[in-house]
Image (cartoon, rainbow over all chains, first blue to last red; front, side):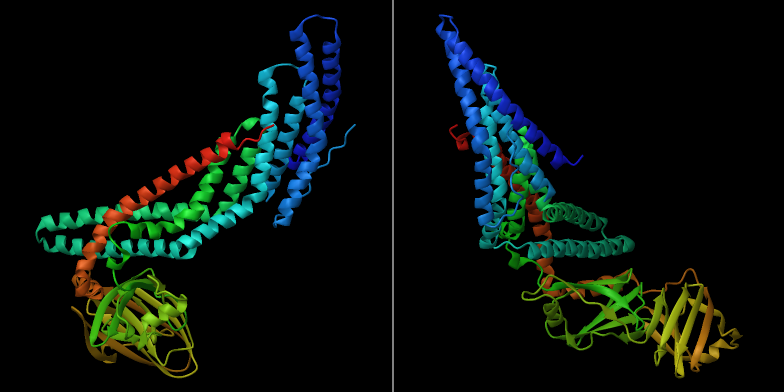
Length: 90
Length: 459
């Protein structure tokens, strides 16, 4: 198998997995945060999970745009590379 | 290019792995810390990847500003190597000569010592030449491989990749600046040997190479000979600017060549544009000579249209000749040889000695020339010879040494010692020092590229 095709395949799988994981983490985070456990430490873990999940979702959504921007700017100064893969979100 | 695309996709993969770690529902700080790190790595490699051609252009601009140039650097290194080889050849002759006459064995040892240091400098120059050829030819491979290694997720091979990248960039930029570095050291280039080295192949009028023989150089009212030809290549030092004539000087005959009454200086300047080169290639075409080997010369006038030398040894000669007109075939032999039998087209010639036309002296050797009238057409000449094993067939080394030192010109003798000191001081110390400096610069640069603690984005 061609190494580039292999890497592309891994990229698309990673994107799908991270997108699904975002939902899972988000849910787990809110579940922990909203659980009737009167302990600040547990609530803070839930808060952290929600924040991380939101950051992850943000980077998945914004990543393609940033790579496109970098490619665009570098093409403007004379480099020619293939466009970044745009992973399909489920 | 393939590796660069691999590096590009690896950087994107690194980014998405960072995102994946962000969204993992495992609240472990040491794991979560990888997420912003991987994302920053990906952006860093991406920016590096896309600005690499600009970085290379910038390094080339720096190189040109400082006065470096790959072509002149490579030809300088090659000329230095050739110069060392030339000095070694000369000193070797001198040493053999001194040991042969058994004159003051201490001097022989001194000459050997100087030769050893020149051999060491030759090694250093060869190391630098090899390194520069490697860097020059596989520069982009190094760059692409370095980027690909840097782009592997989780910083597995980042420092290795950064070192490769830094090595390629630093050596490509700074190796051609070696000449400027040498000029910074005490001895300046101006005290090196004046003049330049001329070399080239030797062929006859049918463009068949003449593997062995001697060259003579005539300029002004001076004549320098015999300069030996080894494996069809001659080498000599020329520091004369006026017109000169090169002869092929064997068996008491001086054969004209294609370089007759011409300025070697100008010929060399024409082949390279601009500056006078240290190393210059001039191929010689010898007029009239068919072939030469160990004191036997075969020549003809007018020169036949086609000559095929099938065998040319001190024992037996077999030559096929083809001509549209009658011609004279000359067989010149030093006195160590006797003709056992001579035949043309299977007609054996009796009383060979009747064909001796004239006798000659060639340095310390005497000989004679047989002249045969050959009619037009295709002919086969075969000669079998008898050799006196004790007699010399070529001029002794003392003549060769004399010619070499004459070519160096007595005014240049102090320069030869300068050159030896330069060889010891600069080429051994200088090359090692320069390569070491470049290596440490590369390592420092690699730390900047690979460790970029201060360059990290706030994520």
